[in-house]
Image 1 (tube, rainbow, N blue to C red):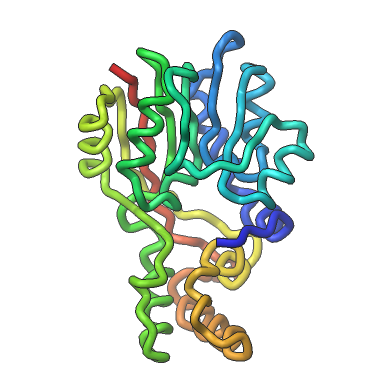
Image 2: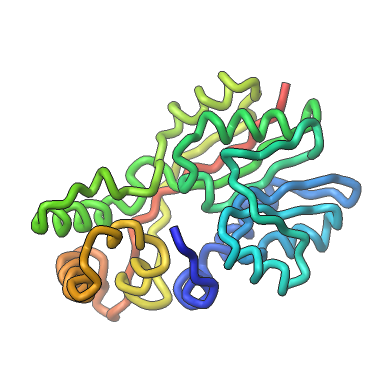
Length: 246
């Protein structure tokens, strides 16, 4: 997945806005060492740094890390599935990133290993049924041109019970975990959202056919996700949790 920091800023500003809600659950303290896993452009990392100066962000996207550094954030290009840390952090925070890391067991194990004893893992991600209407429309569009939606899907959206079990198996005590619907107004339209978040579905579509594909997706979804005011409301479902390393 190639991220464009400018597109992200235009089409996904709400990600950091909603992420502010999780910071109260994280409750960062001045003396703590904190890792922001999948920090993106560093907007929330910078908010954490105002309370806990010893915070570091990692993200697999060089473009996003460049933007984070421009914000003054301590950030590194790194994949969550290959984190090398051991007993280093008091807390690991993640917002809207874990569902991009399909090898969830490796990520959870890496987070557990990176935390100090008693350290906490505080995160929010897409849950089961997240953007269900969007995914269904994309699959329909790909099927028409004889491509598999499942083979191109970059996301992992677990349910509450499934993810809680993974956390417990890795050695976490789950303090809280909730799954909830959060319809989200998009700052542009579903095509802007698609360009920012769903590029992998375009990988095997010839470039001269992609615009038509996107137009068909937008037409397919308009009746369901576009309201009378012309605003697009994506059918988000979130999974939020707080767990402690035993």
